[in-house]
Length: 193
View 1 (tube, rainbow, N blue to C red):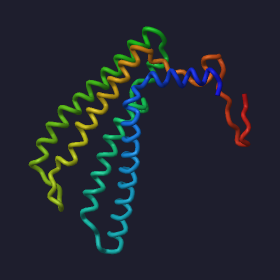
View 2 (cartoon, rainbow, N blue to C red; view 1 turned 45 degrees about the vertical axis):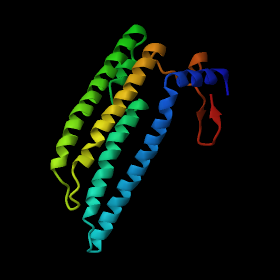
View 3 (cartoon, rainbow, N blue to C red; view 1 turned 180 degrees about the vertical axis):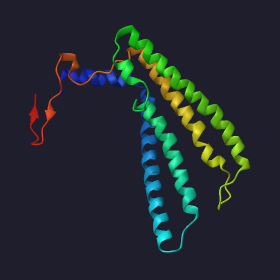
View 4 (cartoon, rainbow, N blue to C red; view 1 turned 90 degrees about the vertical axis):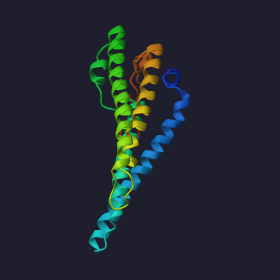
């Protein structure tokens, strides 16, 4: 490994709190399980309907997997900086203007996360008066994903704000330290410089 790559990896390690790395991995695994569960229950729902003996409770399970996957996935995307926000504008800027733009973007994300926590919790409490059919479980079981997601998004956004203000928001590509571009792999497995 080149010295420049080692420096880049060390810098990237400082941009994230190591304690949250395990949480991110656990959430990624959970998202995979939820996606697999969603896909599996959809297939079972189709098969049981086609053979003439539908399992009605499968729709409840499918919707639960779907909703939790979306909200937990949004939190993971926030940690990984993969979520949709105005990155194109911020990445075009440099220096102090980029810092201001990145902070404003993350403050907007943080305010949305706070709304998710507050209004999600209000909906969660109200969800105990409505029930899902045919199991008669409170719909609050679905609404619980909203404030949990909001809390995770807020946590990850605060992490990005603190680390970005300390270390800068600029993300370097491998090889940028030496003014080089990383080698590209061709279809033959040979590297082109």
